[in-house]
Length: 70
Image 1 (tube, rainbow, N blue to C red):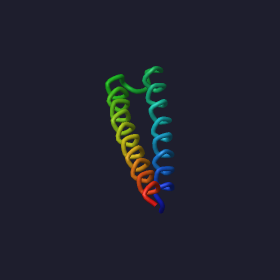
Image 2 (cartoon, rainbow, N blue to C red; image 1 turned 60 degrees about the horizontal axis):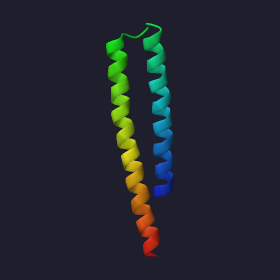
Image 3 (cartoon, helix red, strand yellow; image 1 turned 180 degrees about the vertical axis):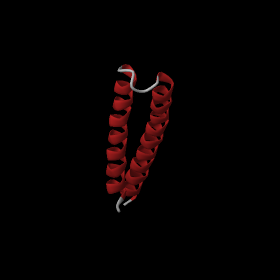
Image 4 (tube, one colour; image 1 turned 120 degrees about the vertical axis):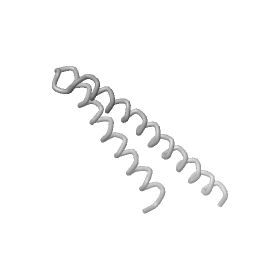
């Protein structure tokens, strides 16, 4: 798998997680999921999202540096 493919995979993962976040909000708002549980999952998603963004940005920078050195 190339770096570009891996970044694309991470982006798909991030978007999928964002969809899950949306469902947690909906489930909380209709009362199906307790607020504490939904908020905990949403907070976890925020941390995971930050990690994914950080990894994607790091890989993009490294890939750009490698391309510029050739």
